Length: 531
Image (cartoon, rainbow, N blue to C red; front, top):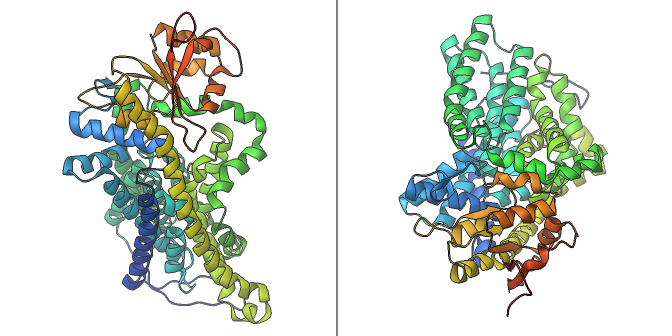
């Protein structure tokens, strides 16, 4: 199929033929760049002993190991819980345990393949959006897989790269509806693929429902199909595919906690509710800037140019602008509900592939326009800066990744290993960061019940997030014997109040790591701390 698009720069209309497919050699380039980047980050992690840069990754590993070894959906074997935000990712990790593959290697391989998928689907999306811009497919794909924040997620042991791949695929499948020449059956199958992709994203991140709704609305308003019969076929396929794909996710959550969502959603929102008082402008910035700082900022320069190009291309603007609509909507959702930007803005990262695709399209329109290049020194500088920034922040990100893994190992993992060696499993432990404890101090052979102070697997603590006396009373009523927290978590737990309960916790271990020292306290009801 041959198509064209209007490029509003250079003083004339340019209609250039192109093919719809990404050439294999350019797909291979994206794959090779992905492999080099993942190996660089994996080497940085291996240099500090291996592991993951987030305690949350150990939560995924704990659920996956228990699922593979016991068949239970549980953080503590024998106690089912809905503390996994990404059930689909848990199942994928569990496959590694069934196959007997080292859990770290399996997580890195899954992350690398998912990152490559994000780059490949982004390249295909770029070709659909900017069909006449040379090298836009491979340019967008390489930019996505070398984005330091996205590349780093390949070795975090988290679901983020899979989420990014799902987003790029959903965006591509949405704009792909503008391609004609299909029968109603083919259109229905395309809709089913779209529905399944949306279901997969929801099973990785609940906000996938937002993207599915926005994409479906864009198709309905733009009416890209040649006939009403084709549109009806696409809606039927998308509905059926979505229902089939999402049914296991809904059934699991309803069975575990009587809700369509995991318990993590309510726990996180309650824990960070105070941040809403900062105001929407500050919170919007906090949500978005960690995910785009670095090389991605260069590509954002091209967004206005790309928007002008996409707007002038004719009908179907809602579909072509969907990557930007999705990015803004996701940022707004977290601004209003969970305004945090930690871990390189990982909650906003699923919006980054679409932003990069649009930005790369605009940058390439600028830097390939001969008239502008001859007249503008800034455009020539942009060519060099776009490459230099990506390389510089990729290397910097690899170094930072190793430091983050070392920090988690020195605190959470070290403390968890002390717990395993010194605290009997039948003595209840209250802990805020449960991941490493769940993996290293809890096993199907010797399950260790815990009281999760973050509420992920112990939702009964959520009402006491801002009630020190109530939280301490809950610990006492549950016969908590030990408490494991970082210094800032200790301060947040008691909120600066001197209460009798707090004085009954006696320090027994200090990891003295890179995050302030993970400390373990023993709980005594009366009297001074014994030696």
